[in-house]
Amino acid sequence: MRSPLDLLATDGLIDEDDRDIRDTVRRFVDDRVRPHVADWYESGRIPARDLARELGSLGVLGMHLEGYGCAGTSATAYGLACMELEAGDSGLRSLVSVQGSLAMYAIWKHGSEEQKQEWLPRMATGEAIGCFGLTEPDFGSNPADMRTRAVRDGDDWVLNGTKMWITNGSVADVAVVWAQTPERIRGFVVPTDTPGFSAPEITRKVSLRASVTSELVLEDVRLPGSAVLPEVAGLSGPLSCLDEARYGIVFGALGAGRDCLETAIAYSREREIFDRPLAAFQLTQAKLADMGVELGKGMLLALHIGRLKDAGTLRPEQVSVGKLNNVREAIGIARESRTILGAAGITLEYPIMRHANNLESVLTYEGTSEVHQLVIGRELTGEAAFR
Ligand SMILES: Cc1cc2nc3c(=O)[nH]c(=O)nc-3n(C[C@H](O)[C@H](O)[C@H](O)COP(=O)(O)OP(=O)(O)OC[C@H]3O[C@@H](n4cnc5c(N)ncnc54)[C@H](O)[C@@H]3O)c2cc1C
Image 1: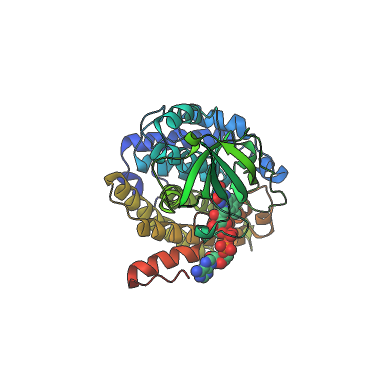
Image 2 (image 1 turned 90 degrees about the vertical axis):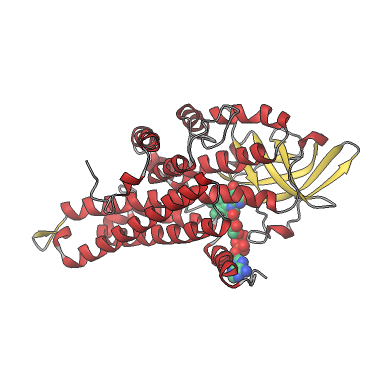
């Protein structure tokens, strides 16, 4: 049966195989995540290791990559999986995005055969967790100026520096760390039990509480020459990975938005105000209609971007259009949905405020809205206005 939320019948634009994958992930989220996620969020603790293994069994870790135990699905299927995961919680989608699109993709795309064999099969099953260290305390939107340094010492590399806001950091078995070398920025595959590596967890977050966020501290971390990602040098390395993760967010954010709107519609039909359901008031319907329109438009945009990615023609500025629009609209939907629930909307009894708070992080990571505006602005004008 068609969901009333599928106003534009976008379901019909999705292949049957991709729909099956989406429905499998949706069932996993309903059974395994929804019953617990408010508690994980409230306590700021998630069973990351158990979840990683379960997500590995489900086949979603690095699902759009080929070989090395990865499922090799379409990019659209990966996007739809991100949507369902984020309908559960942005923290869950973050775990999967960082594992598959950042850590695994970096090794898959830029790594040596030895690095791929060592890490990818274990990461695909969730036996090993990865993180991706680019951001530093003083360099977020401008990673080119990073201070983390890697220098040669004989055949070895020695790394020093601090990374900040790193998803999965404290639970990771392997960190892909980007560092400035005497020549260019390079990526390093760092087992997290290497002496000199530590990952203190960042606490007191009020957003993405069901996600591990950490600092990475590298103090004379000595690695063999084979630890460098051999196939890439310069900022294009990390940026190629960010494009992958941003792609997942184009779909993911809509999942959070959809969950908010579904909750608001259900609540407005139940809640009686002035002797009528809240849903029967024109002002409420105007809000719901505007949200339904944005969700439908966002879905069309996401599916279009998915098709471009499957065709191999997707450009970074197109990902920026998707990330900018869909996160901005999802956060708008979350805020408007919250008003429909009144006071009840501020509690963890309902998912809306949790999604709204999470989306504040989603708005900022993987390129802030302003950075994506600048990417689109450069495309439109030919003028780079970043600095
Ligand atoms: C929960 C969470 C998880 C994260 N996980 C990871 C991770 O796994 N790995 C990782 O490497 N990083 C991660 N990040 C970091 C994230 O990518 C950065 O926060 C982001 O790039 C922004 O950097 P910043 O926070 O230092 O903000 P800043 O770069 O200091 O930006 C501050 C403000 O200035 C604006 N701004 C920047 N440049 C311009 C400009 N040219 N013109 C106008 N305005 C501008 C920004 O848009 C923003 O509004 C995570 C962040 C969060 C919140």
